[in-house]
Image 1 (cartoon, helix red, strand yellow):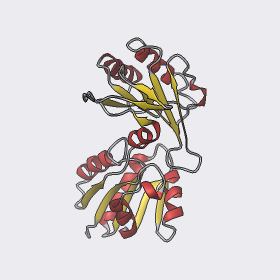
Image 2: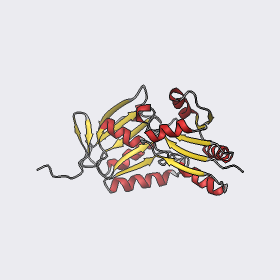
Image 3: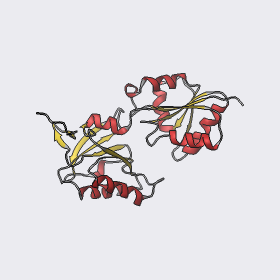
Image 4: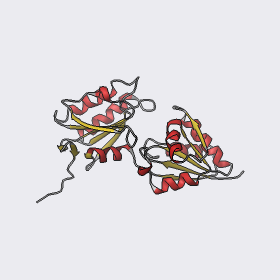
Length: 246
């Protein structure tokens, strides 16, 4: 059987300006690009000449198997994820399936700018100290375990970045998580929200525990909650690293 190459590509938040040179080269050099429908639609704007295979939400295993099977025919396949492919992306599933399928292919992972990094740049500098990235989606992780992790982050005074903060069915998970954090931080603790990072209708805003309203938050948002040292400077969040300025 012919063997090919599978590159798992993180293409960043969505704009071509935020794609790394490695990511662009991997996509340009691929015989086939495989991805979730929404991600492929983004890439078609920048790479209209490429050949694509798509599948919908909740079909990650099927999508990864499809990419591996195509690579086994000798093709150079790019499996694409927004953000970083190794942070809530496809690289872990690919490695698990390559082992499970005993697939004799070369696998390479190309990192990308994750939502936490791109949101941080828009919000100021909130991630200057230890940070926890927590997804509030309970499709693959039990809710009680998610909230246990939120509590651990709260007790250890870590800045927290929430991925997948809210959906049509998960309407109160974010408020529960914020409630846990509020037990360990002051009402003036800064919170930053960025929606549609890197896309045409991108918007970012800041608030505090005291004034936080999650009605504008949805699955397209990334939420950044400061630690006890985070403060506001000209509507931007800053978390001190601890350097002496004297």
